Length: 192
Image (cartoon, rainbow, N blue to C red; front, side, top):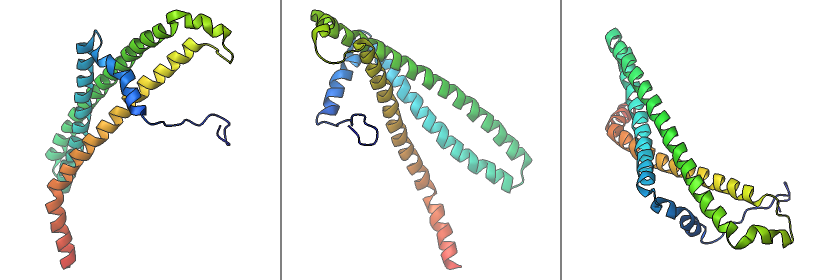
């Protein structure tokens, strides 16, 4: 137990990733595998679309400030229209992303719960638990909560990782494309 909280300290054991994949992997090969794989692919495409909209917003800022610097009313109005388009697309993509993500989380949770509770109920384990020492309050609810945590956090962390990786690549290309401008600006400042 932790000295501060008294709660057990989680122990990361070797082979955790392998066990997690063994538990999670069959879902993508279940009887609805094409629907599940399609939802997963859609989620990845929507994540890519979110990153693309972020990059577009970055370029939009440049265009807006160029129009403001040029004191071009028509240029600013065009950028207001572009912003409205970016905003509408961002709302649509974010809503679709959330819907597909929630569907995938709930479907995976339902599938895994049926599988694990079914295994737990085999051979009367729930009955034999009465005769086993220790606290065994609501094991079915504990299984359901653990599955909810596992599926929700797995998808959440995977999307954060992939989104961050996509943003790293996207903004690296943005920085690379403007690097010649930065070198020119630094050379002017060095010359002065």
